[in-house]
Length: 176
Image 1 (spheres, rainbow, N blue to C red):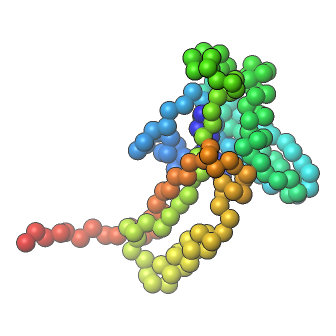
Image 2: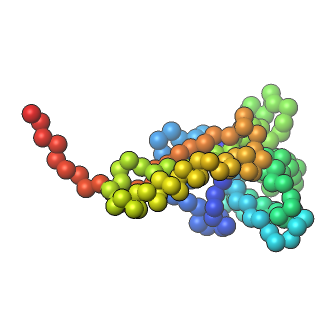
Image 3: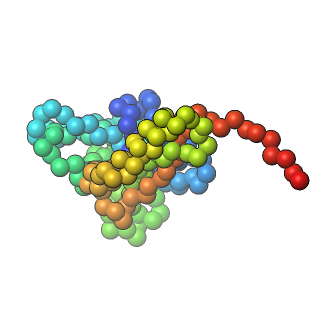
C-alpha cells in the first residue's frame, strides 16, 4: 500500500508530482493508496488525525495534526490509523488474497517521499542559477524528510523529480 506524503492540506488538491509518481513512468500497484499530510500545531501535546475518503476502499487522505513537542513517528501513527479503519469497517481488506498469509491484517506499507532536484534543462542567469544551486546544496545538508517524520528506512522509497525554472530553448543539432 503506497503512502505518499503531500504538502496539500486537503484531499481536493493533491500535487501533480504525487499523482504522476503513482501513475506515470513506473506505476505503483497497490490495493489502497494513501496520501499523508502532517501539520505541526502551536499546541505542545496535540495528537489528532483526520481521514477523508477520496474513493472508497481505494484512495484515502490522512491528515495528522501533531503538537510541536510530539515526535512525529508517522510510520507508527499511520499503522494505528490503518488498523483502526479496518477494525471499524471503514476500509475493507477482506477480499485480498495475500491477507491470508500475512500476520498483519493491513498488509505492507511503502512510504513515498517526493524530493525535487534542479534539472539540467534550465537556462537561467548566473545569479539565479547560483541561488537555486545554493538552495539545493543547503537542502542536501539538512535533515531528510524521511528521518524528520520518523519513518522506518526499510519502508521508504524516495522519488526525485526535476524542477525546470527557465526551460532551455531548443537549438537545432546539425549532422556533419
